[in-house]
Image (cartoon, rainbow, N blue to C red; front, side):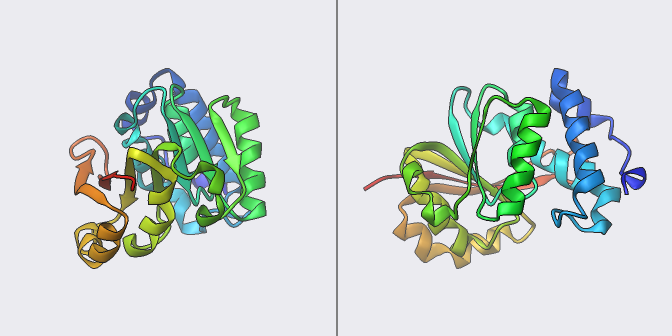
Length: 213
């Protein structure tokens, strides 16, 4: 129920600036309809802002203005819709295979008036028209790196970047994905921690440069 939605943290307005009203509207929409539509669990409402919305928004400065970025497994719009709100100067391609989630994403794009979003109903490995075309690819809470890299790396252009939002096990995931990292010619693979001292739950991001054949 929306009445148990976590109060908006003070940091939210600083992260979204003059787009804060759109972020508030999205948070309210997700709180009101997310559980019934299978997008979030009921236990997520009391931490929706800190654990999910701000956790996604803190990554917004990592993306280059004017770029085209794919969000693999967009689900309820985390991080894709949040980032599209925070960065209207970037075009976002939300890649999601499930029809009901695609319907939700389309509804939110229309409701929020987002003109910088394209929705692609497909699995990442089936989104062939974007292969080698995106300036960056992101994902959040989709899969372990050794599975996620083969889905995301082929979509990035030569010299493009993977910016993958992960949990505390990110360094261990990099170790386990060593073979896949070599196969997909990733360089400068590293973990960055975003938002320490700024938001309640800092975000770990695995970044890597994609080098084509």
